[in-house]
Structures are given as structure tokens and as C-alpha cells.
Amino acid sequence: MNRPVAVSLEALVAVAAVAWATERLLPVLGLASSALLFLLPVLLASARGGLAPGLVTALAGAAAYNFFLLEPRFTFRVHELDNLVSVFVLGAVAVVTSRLASRLKAREAEALERARTSEQAAELSAVLAAGTPAAALDEGLALVARRYGTVRLLADGEPPDDAAFSSIDRAAAAWALHNGDCTGHGTQVMPAADWTFVPLAPKARRGSGVAAFARPAAGATRSEDELDQLRQVGLALGQARDRVVLEDERRERERLEERDALRRALLASLAHDFRTPLTVVIGRLELLARTQPEAQEALAAARRLDRRMTDLLGAARLEAGALAPTLEAVDLVDAVAAACDGIDLPADVALHRAIPADVPFVSADPVLLHHVLANLLDNALRHARAEVAIAAARTGDGVRLTVSDDGPGVPPDQRDAVFERFARGASGPAPADRSGGSGLGLAIVRGFAEAMGMTVTVETADSGGACFVLAMPVAPGAAS
Image (tube, rainbow, N blue to C red; front, top):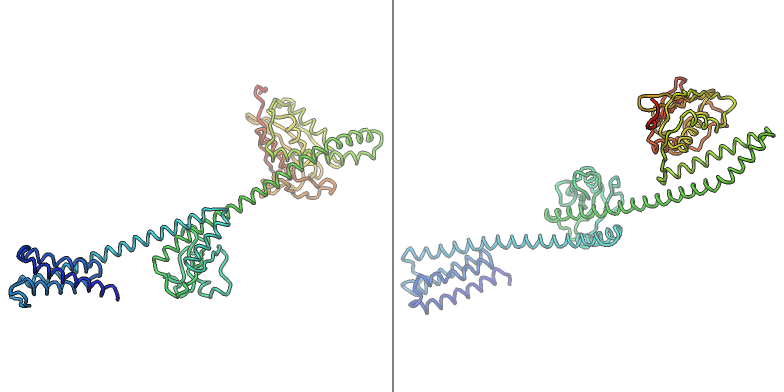
């Protein structure tokens, strides 16, 4: 028995009970009070069963009121307006009560649905927040699949291409990926598709991927409320996927940092361990070169190797952030002379020095400055055709030192790149025996210079080659 019929029967029983009670107690209750009691079955039937049971009960109540209480009693004669009013009043009560009850039930159903949706969203959020991001995403997808059926995540640039997706599904997925809209089954865009495609991020972040939900197994069309739920589920899955991506990036960054730290430690260890025996070798070769000219070539090679070891140590110190310059007043004339004396000048290259005797002292770390000058000179000699020039001049509150060559120069679009580690510029027609380098020299120049508060840039020399400019601050108290 369905609910309206059952409610109607219960209400008719209630009308009979009221008719019996009022007929017995009419002298005590009076006609007006007795009439009001017939409203109770109507209210009951309208609230529980809706309009139809309410109207049936209203008619039954009006008939019982007329038959048992109105004169002449025990007849259905309607001879006064009050008899009709009772029918209309009971019918109006049935209509109003049923409509109010229907609205209340609808609101109750909506509230229960919202509560259920919130509970499901809270459960999904708890699953996605537990454990590692990758495991949480897998658990969340499994939970969503149990509720809504098969689900797949499609990244940007990954249109579905397997047999599960038809051509219209692929078109709907491409639309969703490009526009950030919910498309496919149940939506207004390509509703003929078998899958519903929901963005994984707000519309402002287009191209963040979509979640694909298969058509319900029963073949029903998804309602707008269910689509709203899927949109919220898609955003939650998108946030979980972003956490997986961030976690992967963090692990990759940590792996690279560990690898770089190991490499720096290895380079520093090798450079340090080689320095002592290399110093002994250079000393012996210098003694040999005094009496045996053929030892000069070996001595030059040993010195080049020593510079490479120095570059490796400098690079390791720069990357480890271990530089702690001790700034003091340095005589640039002496510093340039020491740097020039320490290089192996090729026979086919002339070195010109133009350091005025009255150039003011500069504020620098003597050891770091020596490495800067030595690397700038070494770089110029490796690229020069016939000459290298080093000059200095006072400029305002600083000193401008230039190291230039007549080599191929540095193109404007490469002037920042030459200071990067392992950058190798073009050597032009320079001899092959002095065209190679470690790729660390200029990176060390910039790192050491910045540590001392200096700047280094590259320009075009008057000869067309490269001109490296080192801007140095004047030492406090230096002569003007």
C-alpha cells in the first residue's frame, strides 16, 4: 500500500473518531468547538500525505460535520451558508497545510543532501590529506571511483587516446582542457559524450588538467547537483595532484642538491690533495728549467694545471658560500705586477701594462684580487691574436681596470653567459695550444669580484676584441 492511500485511511479513521466524540459531547463542547476538532484530521493528512489525502479528509470531515452535528441532524441537507463555509474552510486548510508541508520536506531533503555532500567532501579531504601525497591521491581516486564510477586524471597536453574514449569524448576533453569548463555527459557542452570532464583547478588556471568521470552504470543522466559535486571533487583531486607534483619536485631538488654537494666536496678534495704534490713538481721543474731549456714546456703545463686546481678550489668555495674576504688597502701597481709575473706569456703575444703610479689604493682582498687578475689575464691570452693590454684609471670615487685583447671579442647577446660556469666562448684564430680553458675562470672572476664589492662587465675593445672592465672601490683614506 502506497503512502497517500495509507495516510487517507488513517485520516478517515481519525474523522470517524472525531465525529463520534463530538456527537456524544455536543451539549458540552458546543457546535463551534466541535467544528474546530474536524481540522485536526485535515492537518494530519495534509502534513503527512500531501494535497490529495488532505482534500479527501476535508470532504470526509465536512460530510461528518454536516451529518452528525448540523440541524437537522443525521441528514445531508445544506440549508444555511455555514454549511458551505465549513467545506471551504476545511479544503483551504488542506491546501495550505499540504503546500507548507511540501516546502518543509523539500528544504529538509536539501539540508540532508547538503549534509551528505559535506560529509563526503570531508571524508575525501581527510583521505587526501593523510599519508604521502602519492598514496593519498591513489586512495582518494579509489574513494571517488566507489561513489561516482570510473575516474581518470588527464594532464594538460594529454588528450585521451585509448579505446575507452570516443571521438566526441576526445573533443570534450580537449574543450575542457583548453577552456577550463565542465563538459561532456550531463552538461550543456557536448552532452552526447559518455564521459564528464571536470577541471582540476579554478577557471583562472586553464590547462591544469581535468578529471574524467564515466557515465553512470545505470545509464542515468547526471543532475546539476551531481555535476556541482563533481566540480568540487575535481578541485580537491587537483590540489592533491599539485601536492604530488610539488613533492616530486622537492625530492628532485634534494637529489640535485645532494649531488651538487658531493660534487663540490669531491672537487675541493681533489684540488686540495693535488696542490701539495703539484707544488713540489713545479718547484723541481723550475730548478730543472734553469739548466735544461726543454723543461720549460713541462713547467708551463704544470703551472696551467696549478691554475686549474686553483679554479676548482675557487669554484668550490663560491658554491659553498665559504668566501670571507679580508678587505684592506691594496696597491694596484704591485697587484698587477704580481699577476703579470705569474703568467706564462706566449711568444707570439705582447702584454702592455698601463698602470699609473699615482693610481689610488683600492679596497680589496689581496689573495682574491690576485686570482681575479690572473684569470682575466689568462682568459685574454687564450683569445688574443697578438696583444693583451691591462690598464687602470681613476673614475670618480673608484678605479676602473681594463683587460683587453685583440681576439674575436664577445657578442652582445653572450656577455652575461660568459660569466656562467663552464661557459666556453669562441677562440677565434688563436693557436690551439692556448685556446682551451676550464670554463670556470670568468665565473670565479665574477664571484670573487662581487664578494669584494666590485663589479665586472665585458665590452668591445678598440681593437675589436673583448675588454673586461673591473670597477673597484677606492680604499678609505687613499690619496685623491
